[in-house]
Length: 326
Image 1 (cartoon, rainbow, N blue to C red):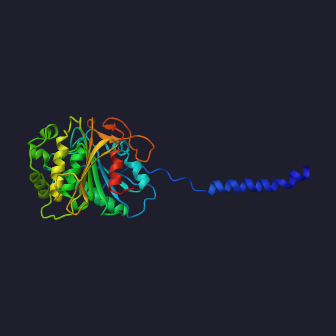
Image 2: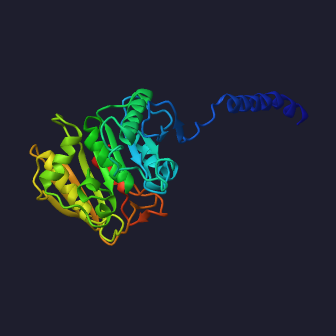
Image 3: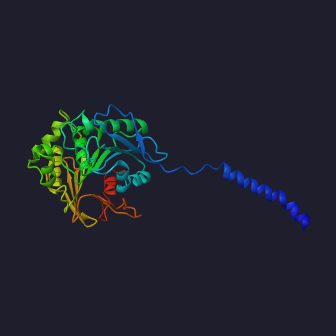
């Protein structure tokens, strides 16, 4: 038995050394991507901060999403609460997250209502446009697949970007937001939010067209999510958004699809070419916030919290599917 053990000892040592070398030479698993701040992305006339989320190993030619937080929120909280970073990892796209600064707005709302921030080439709108250009260059993103979305004031700024920079965005998703030029049409941002502005569809459309004079299209498609019990941004604003963007696209205001999704009324309006140009989700009984559906199911995403409302429908997932992100 002694000779047998001695004979086996080199073999055992060899095996142990081989196992140890295997562990030492095997690369450590890649760490999960994290939110990064980007500086020097342009002249930044709106004095915003730029953050981004780029999944590890993201190949060139992938879509870029711009996600704009609501009042009192920040980039990191909006990135995780909405579920956008989870979907970015799953489907393979990068996310740009502009962040407001209290020096611009004490409540950290994007200034969707201020004339100096909603025009092409100026203020916060120009800053966000510069972020898009920087991101496309840095990640070799697909310029034909850039999307913009936001909640509340971020939704108002989403409409601003779609109107002032339509050539940059394939589509936009507005959550509890406002039509472009609403504060000017209503005479006050608060009247716009709490009551709504009285405009004809053509007048709403003219406000968008005036934001980008001479532009002949294509215009971004629009998806809207609105709670019926939202007393901060009244549902009248979703009606105005439908009026505004069906007019811009040359579509009528009769829905081509009327059904339910997750039990909620859902409408699709098609343009002259037959493509969906406006889509709406009316979330029965929901207050002011971003619709989320926490869980591990395929259609679930987001985390419940202040202004992240668990209504068994995740807006980020629905937008991602509509935009063929995954």
